[in-house]
Each structure stands twice: as structure tokens, then as C-alpha cells.
Image (tube, rainbow, N blue to C red):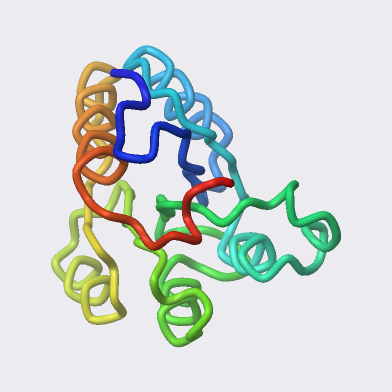
Length: 157
């Protein structure tokens, strides 16, 4: 699927994932799925917040850190975990409209409940196979990048 969404422009997908192998698998799954969007990575919850607020290593040129249309968030990361980052995003009036999809290996009921309590838009347990990940990325991109209306700040130009 190509970028056939209502905007006819790629939407930035920001993935917070500390595992390099998982980042590469996600990149490959989106490429195989023919999802024509701008995929960017941050390495933990603190890096995610720095990106969204354009602080730390992400300070400076706003074109280098476009506002994401959707955030894919792992829960178990160093420095600041996904629960902490999600709580900060959803408590910040300038960030709370960004959809946050938890994409994690956890399927613990406490993690699911906590994520939704903190304001997650969706909770997806990472598939254990590449074909499952491809299917999940296709479904995720179809829903978030083609069917729903995103806030205007999520779309370039």
C-alpha cells in the first residue's frame, strides 16, 4: 500500500524502541508492506520526549524533527520507560493529541490496563514472526495513516 491517505503526503511515524534488531524489523516490515511514510526512531522514552519537544540532541532545526502523525511506543526501555513517556505526552497540552500506539512484547494485563489508563490510543503485542509483523504494520498503517483523521500538525506542509 502506498501513501493513499487523504493528505496524499507521507506522515511521520516515530518509533520509540531501544532494541536495534526490532527497529530494523519494523523498518523492513514497513518497506515490504509498501508503506510510503517517513519512519523515524528514538531510543528510549527520554529520547522520545526530547524529539517531541525539540530538546537535547533534537534541538534546533524543526524540519529535522517533524511532528509525528503517530508514535509507536515500546514499554520496556532504559532511562525513561514507555509508561513514563506516555504519561508525560498525554499530560502535555502541546503533545496530547498525538496518537500513541503501544507496540511491545508484553501481553501482561497490567501493562495493557496501565497503557490505556495513561491515554494510549491502541495496544499491540509485537508479533513473533516477520509475516505477523508485516501484517500488523499493514493494518496499523491502513488504520492510522489512511482511515482516521489526524490533527493538522501531523501532516507536512
